[in-house]
Image (cartoon, rainbow over all chains, first blue to last red; front, top):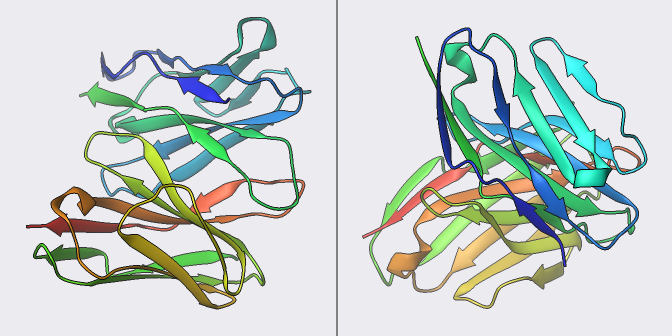
Length: 117
Length: 113
Protein backbone atom coordinates (compact mmCIF):
# COMPACT_ATOMS: atom_id res chain seq x y z
CA UNK A 1 0.00 0.00 0.00
CA UNK A 2 1.07 3.54 -0.67
CA UNK A 3 1.59 5.98 2.15
CA UNK A 4 2.81 9.56 2.38
CA UNK A 5 3.81 11.10 5.69
CA UNK A 6 4.18 14.81 6.29
CA UNK A 7 5.12 14.92 9.93
CA UNK A 8 5.16 18.71 10.16
CA UNK A 9 1.60 19.87 10.66
CA UNK A 10 2.36 23.58 10.88
CA UNK A 11 5.50 25.65 10.45
CA UNK A 12 5.99 29.35 11.09
CA UNK A 13 8.98 31.25 9.79
CA UNK A 14 9.91 34.88 9.55
CA UNK A 15 10.09 36.34 6.07
CA UNK A 16 13.41 35.73 4.29
CA UNK A 17 14.18 32.63 6.32
CA UNK A 18 14.70 29.33 4.55
CA UNK A 19 12.28 26.52 5.32
CA UNK A 20 12.22 22.82 4.50
CA UNK A 21 9.04 20.79 4.30
CA UNK A 22 9.54 17.08 4.88
CA UNK A 23 7.90 14.25 2.98
CA UNK A 24 8.46 10.54 3.55
CA UNK A 25 6.77 7.95 1.38
CA UNK A 26 6.16 4.22 1.28
CA UNK A 27 5.52 2.11 -1.79
CA UNK A 28 6.28 -1.38 -3.02
CA UNK A 29 6.42 -0.26 -6.64
CA UNK A 30 9.72 0.32 -8.37
CA UNK A 31 8.10 2.83 -10.72
CA UNK A 32 6.30 5.69 -9.07
CA UNK A 33 5.87 9.44 -9.16
CA UNK A 34 6.17 12.04 -6.45
CA UNK A 35 4.44 15.41 -6.45
CA UNK A 36 4.23 18.61 -4.49
CA UNK A 37 1.15 20.83 -4.55
CA UNK A 38 0.51 24.21 -2.99
CA UNK A 39 -2.89 25.14 -1.59
CA UNK A 40 -3.16 28.88 -0.92
CA UNK A 41 -6.04 30.28 1.17
CA UNK A 42 -8.20 30.40 -1.95
CA UNK A 43 -8.28 26.61 -1.86
CA UNK A 44 -7.21 25.57 -5.34
CA UNK A 45 -4.40 23.02 -5.44
CA UNK A 46 -1.55 24.29 -7.56
CA UNK A 47 0.83 21.76 -9.06
CA UNK A 48 4.49 22.52 -8.28
CA UNK A 49 6.58 19.55 -9.34
CA UNK A 50 6.55 15.91 -10.43
CA UNK A 51 9.48 13.51 -10.15
CA UNK A 52 9.66 9.93 -11.30
CA UNK A 53 11.36 7.22 -9.32
CA UNK A 54 14.21 6.86 -11.78
CA UNK A 55 15.31 10.45 -11.59
CA UNK A 56 16.98 11.33 -8.31
CA UNK A 57 18.45 14.58 -9.50
CA UNK A 58 17.60 17.46 -7.27
CA UNK A 59 15.69 20.27 -8.88
CA UNK A 60 15.74 24.00 -8.40
CA UNK A 61 13.13 26.43 -9.65
CA UNK A 62 13.74 29.97 -8.48
CA UNK A 63 13.44 29.98 -4.70
CA UNK A 64 12.09 26.42 -4.66
CA UNK A 65 14.23 23.31 -4.53
CA UNK A 66 13.46 19.65 -4.10
CA UNK A 67 15.65 16.90 -2.66
CA UNK A 68 14.70 13.36 -3.69
CA UNK A 69 16.49 10.53 -1.87
CA UNK A 70 15.35 6.97 -2.58
CA UNK A 71 17.65 5.61 0.12
CA UNK A 72 15.57 7.35 2.77
CA UNK A 73 12.28 7.42 0.81
CA UNK A 74 12.12 11.16 1.14
CA UNK A 75 11.17 13.99 -1.15
CA UNK A 76 11.77 17.21 0.74
CA UNK A 77 10.89 20.71 -0.42
CA UNK A 78 12.90 23.79 0.48
CA UNK A 79 11.85 27.39 0.06
CA UNK A 80 14.74 29.81 0.14
CA UNK A 81 14.25 33.37 1.36
CA UNK A 82 10.59 32.78 2.15
CA UNK A 83 7.99 35.40 1.34
CA UNK A 84 4.53 36.09 2.70
CA UNK A 85 3.05 34.81 -0.56
CA UNK A 86 4.50 31.39 0.25
CA UNK A 87 2.01 31.05 3.10
CA UNK A 88 -0.14 28.06 2.18
CA UNK A 89 -0.70 24.39 2.85
CA UNK A 90 1.71 22.20 0.96
CA UNK A 91 0.87 18.63 0.01
CA UNK A 92 3.23 15.87 -0.96
CA UNK A 93 1.73 13.07 -3.06
CA UNK A 94 2.66 9.71 -4.54
CA UNK A 95 1.28 7.73 -7.47
CA UNK A 96 2.11 4.38 -8.95
CA UNK A 97 3.49 3.99 -12.42
CA UNK A 98 1.33 4.68 -15.43
CA UNK A 99 -1.40 2.11 -15.84
CA UNK A 100 -3.37 3.58 -18.72
CA UNK A 101 -6.48 3.77 -16.64
CA UNK A 102 -7.06 4.76 -13.06
CA UNK A 103 -4.25 6.72 -11.45
CA UNK A 104 -4.27 6.35 -7.68
CA UNK A 105 -2.65 9.33 -6.02
CA UNK A 106 -2.02 9.19 -2.31
CA UNK A 107 -1.73 12.56 -0.62
CA UNK A 108 -0.06 13.42 2.63
CA UNK A 109 -2.00 15.33 5.24
CA UNK A 110 -0.29 18.58 4.33
CA UNK A 111 2.01 21.07 6.06
CA UNK A 112 0.66 24.51 6.78
CA UNK A 113 3.35 27.12 6.27
CA UNK A 114 2.94 30.58 7.71
CA UNK A 115 5.45 33.21 6.71
CA UNK A 116 5.43 36.13 9.10
CA UNK A 117 6.38 39.53 7.71
CA UNK B 1 -4.74 25.45 -22.46
CA UNK B 2 -6.67 22.98 -20.38
CA UNK B 3 -8.94 24.56 -17.78
CA UNK B 4 -11.18 23.08 -15.13
CA UNK B 5 -14.31 24.91 -14.04
CA UNK B 6 -16.29 24.09 -10.94
CA UNK B 7 -19.72 25.39 -10.09
CA UNK B 8 -20.83 26.69 -7.67
CA UNK B 9 -17.86 28.14 -5.80
CA UNK B 10 -19.64 28.05 -2.45
CA UNK B 11 -22.83 26.43 -1.27
CA UNK B 12 -24.75 26.31 1.99
CA UNK B 13 -27.39 23.60 2.17
CA UNK B 14 -29.64 22.22 4.90
CA UNK B 15 -29.35 18.63 6.05
CA UNK B 16 -31.50 16.36 3.94
CA UNK B 17 -31.45 18.56 0.85
CA UNK B 18 -30.16 17.36 -2.55
CA UNK B 19 -26.80 18.31 -4.01
CA UNK B 20 -25.40 18.78 -7.48
CA UNK B 21 -21.85 19.99 -8.08
CA UNK B 22 -20.55 20.41 -11.58
CA UNK B 23 -17.10 20.11 -13.04
CA UNK B 24 -16.35 20.92 -16.65
CA UNK B 25 -13.06 20.67 -18.48
CA UNK B 26 -11.90 22.67 -21.48
CA UNK B 27 -9.12 22.08 -23.95
CA UNK B 28 -8.92 18.30 -23.86
CA UNK B 29 -10.97 15.30 -24.90
CA UNK B 30 -11.70 12.10 -23.01
CA UNK B 31 -9.95 13.20 -19.82
CA UNK B 32 -9.68 11.02 -16.76
CA UNK B 33 -11.59 12.95 -14.09
CA UNK B 34 -11.63 12.72 -10.31
CA UNK B 35 -13.70 14.03 -7.39
CA UNK B 36 -11.91 14.61 -4.10
CA UNK B 37 -13.20 15.87 -0.78
CA UNK B 38 -11.15 17.77 1.74
CA UNK B 39 -12.61 18.07 5.21
CA UNK B 40 -11.58 21.11 7.24
CA UNK B 41 -7.89 20.90 8.10
CA UNK B 42 -7.54 17.48 6.54
CA UNK B 43 -5.97 15.86 3.51
CA UNK B 44 -7.66 14.84 0.30
CA UNK B 45 -9.99 11.87 0.07
CA UNK B 46 -10.71 10.41 -3.35
CA UNK B 47 -14.45 9.96 -3.88
CA UNK B 48 -14.94 9.01 -7.53
CA UNK B 49 -13.03 8.73 -10.75
CA UNK B 50 -14.09 8.39 -14.35
CA UNK B 51 -12.13 7.28 -17.40
CA UNK B 52 -14.93 8.05 -19.87
CA UNK B 53 -18.59 8.86 -20.47
CA UNK B 54 -20.83 6.80 -18.23
CA UNK B 55 -17.87 5.14 -16.51
CA UNK B 56 -17.75 5.87 -12.82
CA UNK B 57 -15.83 4.14 -10.07
CA UNK B 58 -16.31 4.81 -6.39
CA UNK B 59 -13.57 4.71 -3.83
CA UNK B 60 -15.59 5.24 -0.69
CA UNK B 61 -19.14 4.04 0.03
CA UNK B 62 -21.30 6.98 1.07
CA UNK B 63 -24.46 8.85 0.22
CA UNK B 64 -22.80 10.60 -2.71
CA UNK B 65 -22.92 9.60 -6.36
CA UNK B 66 -21.25 10.79 -9.53
CA UNK B 67 -22.14 10.87 -13.18
CA UNK B 68 -20.36 11.62 -16.44
CA UNK B 69 -23.06 12.59 -18.92
CA UNK B 70 -20.66 14.21 -21.37
CA UNK B 71 -17.00 13.79 -22.19
CA UNK B 72 -15.93 16.93 -20.35
CA UNK B 73 -18.56 17.05 -17.63
CA UNK B 74 -18.39 15.36 -14.26
CA UNK B 75 -21.18 15.77 -11.73
CA UNK B 76 -21.26 14.98 -8.03
CA UNK B 77 -24.68 14.45 -6.49
CA UNK B 78 -26.53 13.51 -3.36
CA UNK B 79 -30.19 12.89 -2.73
CA UNK B 80 -29.99 13.81 0.96
CA UNK B 81 -27.07 15.67 2.44
CA UNK B 82 -25.59 14.81 5.83
CA UNK B 83 -23.69 17.13 8.15
CA UNK B 84 -20.58 15.05 7.46
CA UNK B 85 -20.78 15.97 3.78
CA UNK B 86 -19.48 19.44 4.56
CA UNK B 87 -16.10 20.11 3.05
CA UNK B 88 -14.18 21.38 0.09
CA UNK B 89 -14.83 19.45 -3.10
CA UNK B 90 -12.17 19.40 -5.76
CA UNK B 91 -12.38 18.14 -9.30
CA UNK B 92 -9.19 17.05 -11.01
CA UNK B 93 -8.17 15.88 -14.44
CA UNK B 94 -5.26 13.64 -15.25
CA UNK B 95 -2.87 14.81 -17.90
CA UNK B 96 -1.74 12.34 -20.49
CA UNK B 97 1.36 10.20 -20.48
CA UNK B 98 4.21 10.91 -19.86
CA UNK B 99 3.35 13.91 -17.72
CA UNK B 100 0.72 11.89 -15.86
CA UNK B 101 -0.12 14.60 -13.37
CA UNK B 102 -3.42 15.55 -11.79
CA UNK B 103 -4.47 19.18 -12.15
CA UNK B 104 -7.18 20.61 -9.98
CA UNK B 105 -10.09 22.96 -10.39
CA UNK B 106 -10.85 25.88 -8.07
CA UNK B 107 -13.08 23.78 -5.81
CA UNK B 108 -16.53 24.10 -4.25
CA UNK B 109 -16.88 24.84 -0.57
CA UNK B 110 -19.97 23.08 0.79
CA UNK B 111 -21.43 23.75 4.21
CA UNK B 112 -24.27 21.56 5.40
CA UNK B 113 -26.25 23.03 8.29
